[in-house]
Length: 249
Ligand code: 13P
Figure (tube, rainbow, N blue to C red):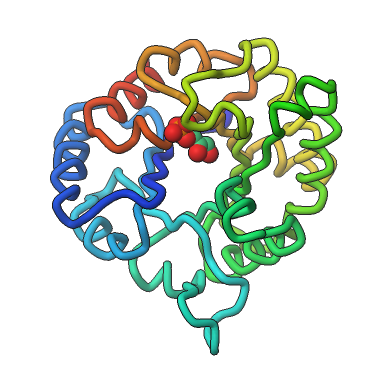
């Protein structure tokens, strides 16, 4: 059994005034069964403040990291710095980083390696474009990106998460069919097992792309969907916690 992980990605949203949402999440969590892990990845500016109010249940993560520990890399943040600020996870290879910052899979692999070195759990994102899905190339694209992006697992690594994010479903309100989600998640599981052996059976595979309170239960019921990577619907405590409740019910 893989423990479900409900992960929110605030992307470039959130000011200190948004910490009231975190307060509401922590408050609501205290009345709910501890049936799934829950994580928020705010902008780096908010990690420290969020971690200090997160309590025992809510985990905090970064949205990207450099592959080096420190040095002359203006504007970048290392995995060690995320740990120092209170993070325990980091998203790597999100399609928005791949597109906005030309982060290629080889670099994503080195970021994931850096995360493991620092003691963070990397959430490695993979997904296809709409045109690739239409051409029937989804499986080939996902497998290729995974093979290039997955890091070697050091002994003592704290685990790894993969997020399937069909690029065309992000922020659009559109989602693949449940059968399509199931096919991709089964493929991701197979590649994880090929790569990491039995450990690959324990790694959560998240679905990401317009997951909302209204569709979460159905998506989370698909085989090998072990949680969600949620953008827009993680910004409001009510929506995010409705998704969490769908995961524990
Ligand atoms: P939305 O939930 O806003 O579609 O974003 C999802 C996402 O970015 C998955 O990685």
